[in-house]
Image 1 (cartoon, helix red, strand yellow):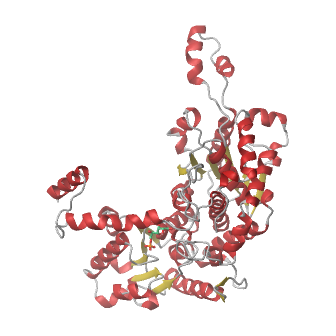
Image 2 (tube, protein in one colour):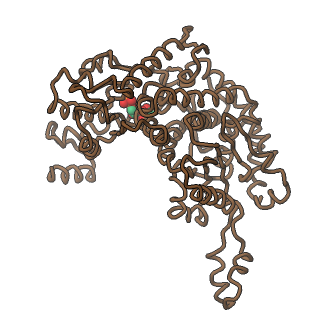
Image 3 (cartoon, helix red, strand yellow):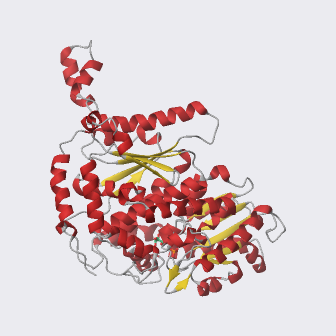
Length: 546
Ligand code: G6Q
């Protein structure tokens, strides 16, 4: 079904006219004019609080954005997603990661069948298995308890469980060390294997397709390493798989009894809620894994029922859309002021850029007159402040920032936490306010006048730079679940507005086939093909070195 072009929708055109004025606004003045701005432009749901008042927008902006969302059928598409319609049009698949975190009594229908029994059947198996590894009933082939888990997977089969295991380290089992090998670079595997003992190591081969070249190579290497030190029949105690492809895991030599399935209606980057989350259940236990799902489900319930104006993912999506579409912001920086969220920016990078990094509409028309997904990047605060925040404060590009923080720490160094939060809030204040030339002059008072005037342009900050702040009380499995779901739905909202299919990834698929030809040439299994002179030259240098 072909939607009218985004730029022809009346509310889009009103937004464009409105943006011509908004570009002139100074947030300092917006705050001065409206003492209620913070109360008005903040919203709370599922344990998360969002302050979006430090953006260049007002009530009218939000009204127009909500109108646009309605005109673009964002709510309709949301309902279609929850109803199991095949909204992933290029792969003819439903998009039902929300079914993975719904309680057992909540039916989810796909092709007329309720899938919740399948989902909860796999969750029960995850519980039984993770309980037995954690309580020591599941042992390695020489009778020793498992001490190390190595998850072998890449992309969506790596980033989610790795990010969540790191984020929830406070809840982790003290005996179990989690390792994640994703890169085909042998240094990755080498580093993991050098730290573990085969007798006490459990390998999880995580691959939706079980054909991904990097994962298959890593899985084969791990298997060969293991079999150098253990008999074939020991494999069953040390190798399990998470996949949708039973045949391939049998061929690899894993007993289907040790396979945790999921389904093609779960996209890789949306799969941490499925059996791909097995490392999480092993590390923090099934109870906390359940809390992660429940937190995400609470956000789902809010997303599907709250009106746009009070809907946290809708607002986060609309504000980001406004910055991208009308205020020319080409990237978004993610700044978690929480060390345990240090992989969250990398996780969001995939979630957002793989979903909305698209240049054709859902009907296949090339998008020529508006922009789609921004670049997502970032690192934890306060570290970023001592590195790239310079550009964010005084560079020529304007980059909106999402600050994320927990009000209470899970440690006892309270003075650290006050310092951390002070930095977080001070940065968002500085981005908004900036520093005027007169303020700089006051700071420099007492110095020679010509010296002051020489320094003023360098020490002036334009300010008026947008940011959101997301707060939670503690970082817990439930608040983390809600946070991830918030961003999933934000990506959904923006994809719907841009009319792109957020659920395919043909660019990733391309990467899966590109290297094969050159790999055969490097290994001497194929005659060198005719490439361009750069590629030929690089191949020749590598061959000379191998
Ligand atoms: C995610 C992508 C991609 C995928 C990996 C791994 O949405 O599709 O990152 O997760 O390429 O794929 P497999 O799980 O099939 O190995």
